[in-house]
Amino acid sequence: MRTETLATRHFPTDGLIVAAGLTPALQQVICLEGLKLGQVNRARVTHWCASGKVVNVGWALHTLGGPSLLLAPLGGDHGRRIAAELAELGAATCWVPCRAHTRVCNTIVDETATVNSELVITELVENANPVEPDEVATFIDTFAKQAAAAALVVLTGSLPSGVAKDFYGQLLRRTSAQAILDVRGEELLAALPCRPLLIKPNREELEHTLGRNVATDADLCAAMRELNDLGAQWVLVTQGGGPVWLTSQRQTFRFQPGKVQMVNSIGCGDCLAAGIAWALRRGDTMIDAVRFGMATAATNAESLLPARFDAAQVAGRLRDVRVVDAQV
Image 1 (tube, helix red, strand yellow):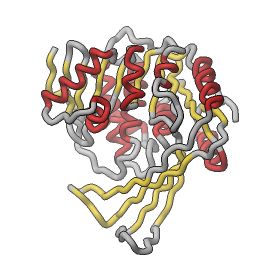
Image 2: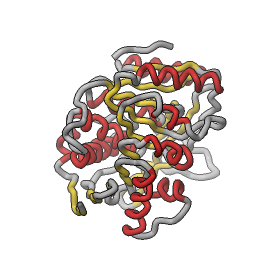
Image 3: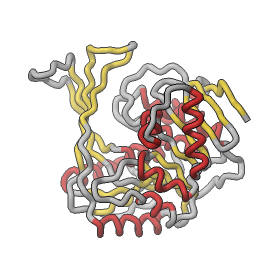
Image 4: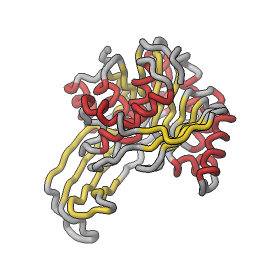
């Protein structure tokens, strides 16, 4: 497999955005009329696509436009299918070959069941197979070369078993680019001394990372500021379709997303990260970049397949995203 080339106002407005992570997936989306547990269920239609958090971020960046690169390990027949799809779509990619097969994940869409007017989506997630130490070393070296001239890097996804918890910290120490991290737990805490520009756990991931419940908005902001104090320049926390919170050490902002006709929520957080990175690279402030990222995520939510949204619709969604509270 080979390489295919391709908030503040002073943020760099040119250069590559590199999306990197260790857990791509081949995704099967199964649409059926009524999921019956313990019985035979026949699909009305089935779709296959390249996915996993890093692939979703990379494809969303490609869709939005501008120079970007997707870096991930691939192995086996599933990996070859992912590589072939991304090549056909024209995305710039750099694949690190690995001996283990790339995982398969399944999304089950029950077209007859709704909760709060939204379709019921069930995810069956296969954990990533181990990446061997020599493959991890190759990945880190490849990242350092590809990110040498990057304006931004987006690091995302869980770590396969056996990979050191400071893996993302190792990546950050090999680049001078600003970084957005979409990770949680020990691997997030280990990366904070590198002072990433933005981290974006959801509320559940924030609780997991800090090992405690976050019951109230005051608890939430206190927990976010704790991560600011540990090194994150900005902390962004999502809550499904609820308000989105953003903190620095001195500022707090609350954003209200617009109403969405949800089709599939898979990939929304990845599109949020991609949208923020894309907007920062064009020179937006962090506040405007978060609004753009939220609009990108909302557009993705109305698509069946993850990160396969219409970029032309994002600008229209931007008007629906409001900053409803700010403390400076």
